[in-house]
Length: 80
Image 1 (tube, rainbow, N blue to C red):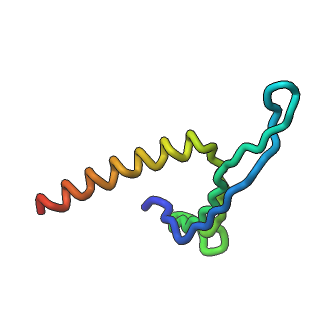
Image 2 (image 1 turned 120 degrees about the horizontal axis):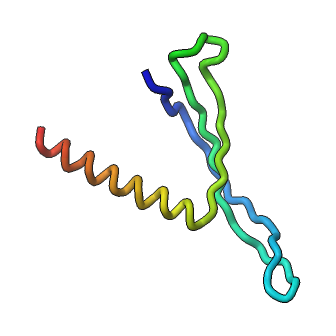
């Protein structure tokens, strides 16, 4: 059995990064906190929290892929 997502939270983090002319600019990223339940582990260690930081570009890529997954699931659900 695979681990399952129990819950998630997110927030936007702003970081100062070096920009042109030595100036520092703000760069946003999305931080996801995923609460995971792994039924293959003992009751004491089956719950864990994983944090993932995504740049705007990476977040867009993930969302595009989730959109494709949703479309494929919807197509398969219509066949039944």
